[in-house]
Image (cartoon, rainbow, N blue to C red; front, side, top):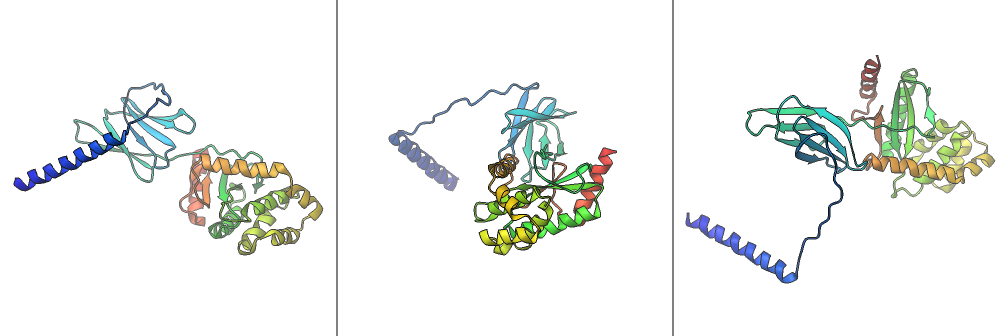
Amino acid sequence: MKTFRYRLFIVLCAFITLFCGLSDAGAKIEWSILKNVPLEDTPRDVAISQEGTTAYILCSKSVQVYSITENKVTSVIPLTGEFSQLALSPDGEQLFLTQATGKQLSIIHISQVYDIPKGTSPVMGKATTPVTVFAFLDYQCPYCSRIYPVLEQLLKQRPNDVNLVIKHFPLPMHRFAEKASLAALAGARQNKYQEMSKELFSNFQNLNDETIKQHAQTAGMDMTKFNAAYNDPAIKKQIEEDRQLGMNMSVRGVPAIFLNGRVVKDRSIQGLSQMIDEELKKAK
């Protein structure tokens, strides 16, 4: 008991010292209300996703999914029971709901499905297939150079089911990644996008101003048309739009792969094919 009291005394002394120190320094809290969000249900608890883009709001009859970046409720998960608290798993895929008086834990599996626009991005494969793989890639990234042949193989194996759209996400650390993206999109204007992408990924270790043009020649381009397209501000703008799209989707690194808007975790041919089969079943 004496030991406990002594420890309590030490903690209180430390707290008083800290408080007095803050008071002497004139510390204060400044605050302001950023916004008030109207809800159609009574809120009880809230959990924030790890990347800070989504809030899951536990209400009396539902979980309201609030997009912080879009400033609106994007989804509503209906509840059949009464819950008082919720927590979000670190991977953001499970919601844990508990009752204040009940002896029950309810677990809800959640998955984020993004509405990814194709925009002006070139499409590899048939544009009308029911499944689209969106790949945020960097032409100087060694991991992207490994995933690209897998995606090419997928297009060959499932030509009637899936197409591929590359969203350009050149990383600042890679000096020639953005220039490689400019070259690839310039190649698209001569229907050489896939050939140019293959050339760039196959030679990611030696990309520079000179070799990028050499790869354009190898891909069979008219160099006068290539140079004109390469310097077109519209292509640079497209790359910036791709990068901004990725940032809005919390893409922090590459490769980042999405299949019909769903995050791809198993990037093997088998894993991708399984996801394609699941999407085709949903379509039926």
